[in-house]
Length: 401
Ligand SMILES: Nc1ncnc2c1ncn2[C@@H]1O[C@H](COP(=O)(O)OP(=O)(O)O)[C@@H](O)[C@H]1O
Ligand SMILES: O=C(OP(=O)(O)O)[C@H](O)COP(=O)(O)O
Image (cartoon, rainbow, N blue to C red; front, side):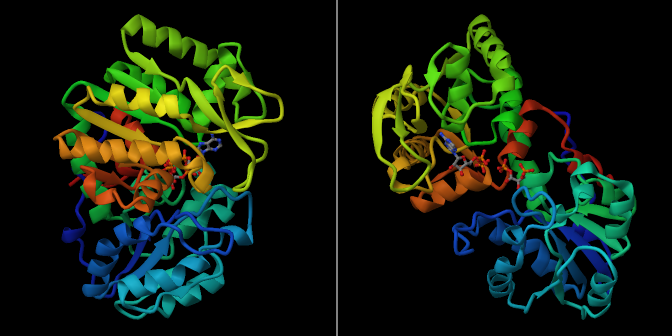
C-alpha cells in the first residue's frame, strides 16, 4: 500500500488551551427541509472532538458540505449545529465564514473545551484549488492541526492538505486512524474471491478507479448512475439517464480490459426507468438495452438483483461504494435495499463486507443493516482510492509518527 498507515498521533499532542484546527467530514445528506437523513459522519467525528474538549483544547471545526459553487445558502453547515451540540454535550458556536476578522474574533472567544464550527470551507473556490494563501489563512486561526476527515482524504484541498504545511504538529484524528487501520489491512490481503460493487452518481470521479480495481478484484459489479455510460458505449439507447459523454471510450476500454484480465464485470441486465426525476414518477422495468427516449434509469431491475446476488454468493470479501439507484425515492430503492440485505446475509456467513461512502452508508442505515456489516467506512471515494493503492493526500501531508 502506498499510503502511510501510521501518522502522528493525537495522543502525543499537548492540547490544553491550544487552538486546534480539526478538519472533519460533515458532508451528511440533508432533505429538502434541511433535516439530516443520516448522521453517521457526525457521530464518527465525535470521539476526536470529545477527546480534545476533555483535554481543554479550543476546537475549531472545519468541513465542506456538498459541492457548492461559491457561497450557496443551501450548502450551509448551520443545520448541523443542533445535532453536533447534542452529540458532543456542549453548545457548538457557528461562524458565518471560515476565514476573516469576524472568524478570528470568534476563535479568540473560544473557551478551553469550547467548539466553534466554521462555515462551509468550499464557499471559497480556493479550497478545492488548494490555494496556499487560503491555506495560510485557515492555518493562522490555530496552533495545531488534526485531520479526521477520512471521507475527504483523497482530495488535495486547502483544508485537507495545504493547511498541514503551515501548522505543526499536524496529526490524524481517531476516525482517520481507525479507517486506515481497518481498510489498509482488509484490502492489502483480501480473502478471495474479492468483489467490488460500484454505483452512485459521481461517475467521473469513480470511473477512473475501475481501471485499478480490475487489477485487484475477481468480480466487479456496476450499478447506479455509473452504468449508462457503459450502455451508451455499447451502442444502447439510454434515454435521459445520467451519462458522462467524455468517458465513453474509457468505458469501452474498461470492458475490454476486464475481459483480457479474466475479471467478471457485471452490468445490470434490466433497469427500472422513470419518466421524470421525482419520487412520484411513473416507472417500469425494461431490459438494459431498451430505454426509450424521455425515460431515465433510476434503479436496477429484479432480474439483475437475482443475478448480482448469485454472483456475490461466491465471494469472500466485498467492498461496496455507491447506491444501485436513487434510493432516496422509495420507488427506486429496491435494488439498493436488496444489495444491502445480500451483504448482511453474507456477513453472517463470514464474508468480509465493507460499505463506504456518505450515501451508501445512509442507504444501509436506512434499512437498519449497518451493524451487520464488517466495516462501515465514512469514505466512498477515499476507500476506493486506498484500495487502488493510491496515496491519500490528506494522510501524506501529516507529520510522521
Ligand atoms: N441511476 C441513477 N441516476 C442518478 N443518480 C443516481 C442513480 N443511482 C444512484 N444515484 C444517486 O447516487 C447518489 C450517491 O452517489 P455517490 O455520492 O457516488 O455515493 P456515496 O456517497 O455512497 O459515495 C445518491 O444520491 C443516488 O440518488
Ligand atoms: O461524500 C464524500 O465522498 P463519497 O461520496 O465518495 O463518500 C466526501 O465528503 C467527499 O466529497 P467530494 O466527492 O465532493 O469531494
